[in-house]
Image (cartoon, rainbow, N blue to C red):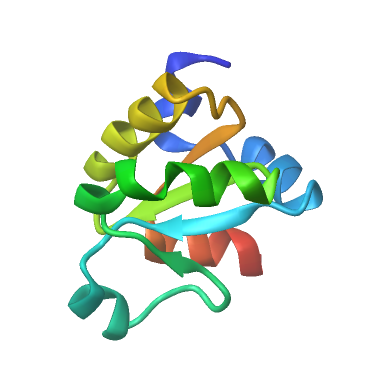
Length: 103
């Protein structure tokens, strides 16, 4: 995985993860999530991610992260990889990710 796709979540990486049944985790606050989100995504604010690692690990699926602008995805990916969840894709901005998924 290149560092650019790690930061910006390349479309091919997103498609592959979706094809493997990925779960989309929105790292924004509950308020931000309620203002608009990708259908069927899971809201786990980045400050609560460490407390939900077992929940994500138990799903046994790739994880696609999204947030407001992409910065929290970088942090979230690092947290998950340190916890041994290696199939993590940085989807970046949730609206851009939603366009990729619909496109």
